[in-house]
Length: 128
Image (spheres, rainbow, N blue to C red):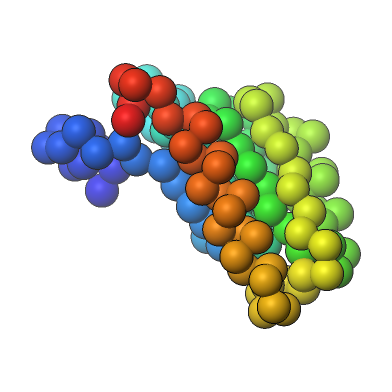
């Protein structure tokens, strides 16, 4: 889909993945960069499992934001480990009081605000 969008539109393509979809987003971003086909301007992982992208993590070139709930201790630890393996610009954002699905009042809105700021902050005139 990304390749089609790049060929047929001027729409900037960023990736957002939640849970295991975060690994898929990171893997796809790494594969595009590895193939020399282009770079994704930014990736956001929400409550994700970026660790599942294991061997591809060092190959990700897209600036990556990892958002994790402060009460989701296991996933928070996995995200810390994944952040250490990323060679690209990255940030781990912890949403206080949030569990894995961000069901607590205001926590999903916090995720949306963080993701929006990350995406808009990484779109350049060329990619926007």
